[in-house]
Image 1 (cartoon, rainbow, N blue to C red):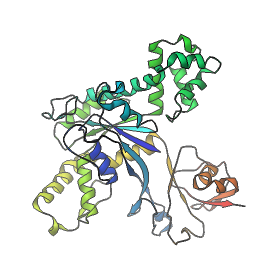
Image 2: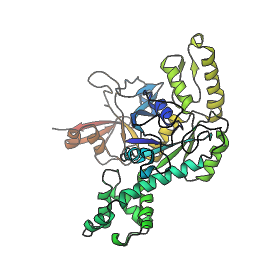
Image 3: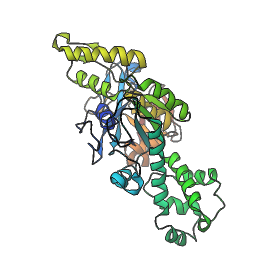
Image 4: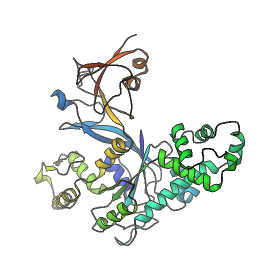
Length: 397
């Protein structure tokens, strides 16, 4: 799974990325601080099965705090998009190409209205962030259409002996677009029975828009809620885009909390609405003021900084993935004694056999049965799994 982070320059994309991953990236109040894409690992949060088994886990990847397990997910932060990106403006084609493997896009918007269309700093409240959502969506859709229009005549000629859906699926090979999504897009745009040579430019654009929405869904992150002008704009965003999830966010506050927690100055579980100061005497005046602001103006008002909420919503609510833990009825640890060391993200509808294949091809090849460790019931290869199941696999040779 790969989640892409998009938006115009200087809206807080790299700050969001660093807050989610604690990776070292360039952050500066100027456009195009990011040129090459940043790739890193963020985490989704679930309740750890250690609570059910009254034990303490030892994650091999990710981490666990007070029974809250953080499972890795890949993130990519591409350089800021500007109007005309699909034509190559601002190196837009290069940046958009970095997103072809993304399963979902997080669109970071400056909800405070303090950056103009080019990503330059202006007076808060003087720019309408609604424009950013429209222009980024437009750029993404035109980018998809451009992939189709490129060599369209040659593509149509070579596709005459093929079914249109299969030909189109082949054209988007590498974009993580399924044949079922192609078929649905054709149906929804009423192009099912229309032969490819008869398609107009409008048909191409409508189809491209539909397949992009299906294969690259977008969550809107209304960033910079630490600036007072954001609140009114967030309501406008929700009203203007009722079919989109709009999440209020302060990436800067989340980054400050995670950095403080990393230095053991505070205890903070990402996604919580509070934190505990551990070393008050180690904080200087500016740090105390910053933490007080975050607690009273961000967490108490908004419920969280929004960063963890965004990742969880993306993976669990939009993509419908689930977390499955390998384990044994009589032994939750691995050969090195680590308890519940692994956690895997699986797509919706995954079965016990799918889980076996995820761990190792031999487990799937020699699959005999599986056991739900929580219920101690044996399950078959076609049994669909549920979020946070702990599964023991039984395989032959």
